[in-house]
Image 1 (cartoon, rainbow, N blue to C red):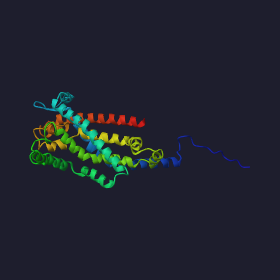
Image 2 (image 1 turned 30 degrees about the horizontal axis):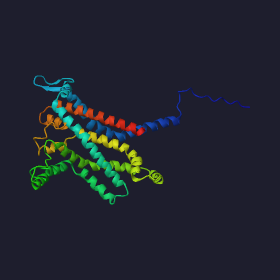
Image 3 (image 1 turned 45 degrees about the vertical axis):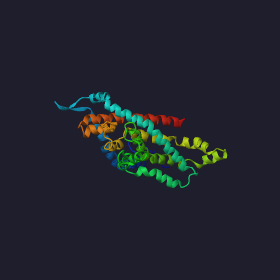
Length: 315
């Protein structure tokens, strides 16, 4: 009878099983591959987004002075901006623009999306393209086109006034200029928001429509009970985009300023104010301060809207 030597196991930690080592190496290679894929985006994100923001914050903390040159002033630029009447006038104007124009634009986009999604509208594909087409027109071209339509002396408005024998239509009047700009923005972006709503409508399960039909629900009941609840997320997204766009209002008033220089001032909107401070007044520090303040304020408002929309969707 032969004795067998007992099998001894090495102390824990002295040897690692080969499969475990292989799994660790495989995981490490996968992480490096993932990093290699996202590296181009990270580089572009750092150069295009993070670096300009950091540099703007740096500029906002300094001020060009007659004696001493570019000196560190801390938060003095922000304190001075809070007391700037021109900044608050432009800010109040775009806020009023947002409160009036955004609901009108989103309501029109919602009605258009519901109409195209319904089976009652003939040639829905044609109407979808026609409504979306203005968004494909470059903003500069769109503003110039509407600017010549609004012209009091040379455009369609002037021709209509001549035909009526009065000055009834005055798009460039002080009390109508914001409405005129709102009309241009609405014309440009109704199709964009309509496409967001329409895309959300197309992913609603058909089972819900079949169940509603069996229950005897009419078209309006289907809209209020199925379609509108399904659109809540899309409406929140469109609202956030519209809020950001309203506070970034620049192209339309800046281009129309050549046609109505006495009505549209250099501080008509905060973005125009920042632009003119930088390129006309060479006040780069003040311009950066306006940009940072508007960026923070817009981010806060957009976050609040998103938070409230998410809570309502959870309920």
